[in-house]
Length: 237
Image (cartoon, rainbow, N blue to C red; front, top):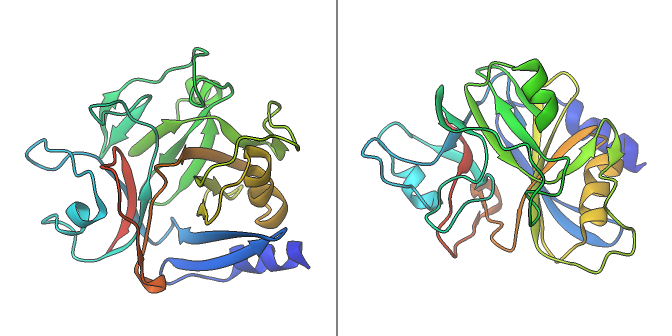
């Protein structure tokens, strides 16, 4: 039944972003489905004056944003809120890709990135990105990968004790659909990744962050606030 529900969630044609609260294995998640073929899915970091947006309110107030119908923090950032890894916005390379192993979740290889074009969204592992060089209009790198080719990240343990509010994104095999997810309670990496694979049926998924995870979903009456953010992903009308 869960597989059937996930298939319907991905297969029904969307005329707008669709967000819903989902219970999976007695844990609560919010999942927002974006049809990248028809929706204006974009990354936001700095405005026309070079100032960092930092919040959903700032993005919503931008001159070229008439309506913000969904937004989420979109990757890890340094203390000055600059992106940690690869970041491309509107065709401009801001920071190059990082492929070496390192400290923290970002360096827990394999990591990956979200690559967005005018008609697609694709989660791709970082070394695969280097090999294939897809043409991304927008891209944000984060880590670790949650699901790689249908398999959970090899470092995730079913009995892992690290539990946080987490957010991430998975994409369909045809790159048409992106599903952005935030947990509504602290979960482990294994539990979070399992939601993407076992409930949503997605073969590629990427961790975006934990603790700082925030969601803007006006259809649910939700606009999370807190610390200032780095990269933000959103859908505009």
